[in-house]
Image 1 (cartoon, rainbow, N blue to C red):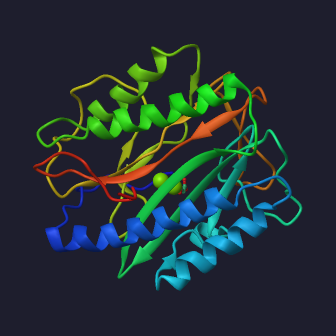
Image 2 (image 1 turned 180 degrees about the vertical axis):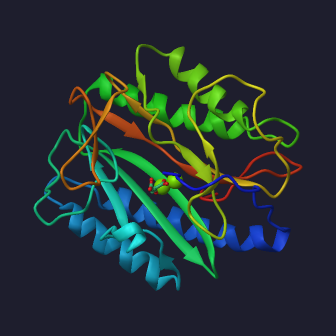
Length: 258
Ligand code: LMR
Ligand code: MG
Ligand code: MG
């Protein structure tokens, strides 16, 4: 989500990147705990409570809580929900669901932002493939985040990979973003487009790459809660995200656990 006027892309020092790495590790460890907790019968509000404990017990601050009025520490988007699902005690996970969990944390003013999509028990081969394609497209995008390259190389790598895998819908209304002293900063990082366009990538720039890939149409709808985004055709969606820094030695994935 990104609606502000364009401004210069924030460049971080090595020391600042080290703090962003700490925030990224809090997010990564929290998502790992949440992934392990996902099972039939657990509610998305239970997952939110685990996330809040995990983030605060590490001395970090959940960035989503209160962000533009969002009421929870994570977004939990189940099945046809693409992003921004609100955790609820009445949303009970069932065998065969897929859930996207999106998490953000702040350490000393620096942000990390990452998401995974997790199967609940057994899912169909078609759905497993959707998750694999979405995750791999994120890695392809991250790998294109090279010093001296251009911003649009990232989205081009995501799109090229997904298009080569089948007839998936790539969501266009919601995109990745710059990140640093705020969660959402310039520039927007779309998951599609031509290569070789936009700003030249410089060491110290940080971006969140977050493809949303659907089994069917790329169209989206917004539910009446004004948060939850679902697929236009009700088919399932996947969402993966990592925060990375451009460095002289290639992309440094700040939210990945080693
Ligand atoms: C994001 O990945 O940017 C999310 O965590 C939050 C949002 O508003 O999309
Ligand atoms: Mg996120
Ligand atoms: Mg993000």
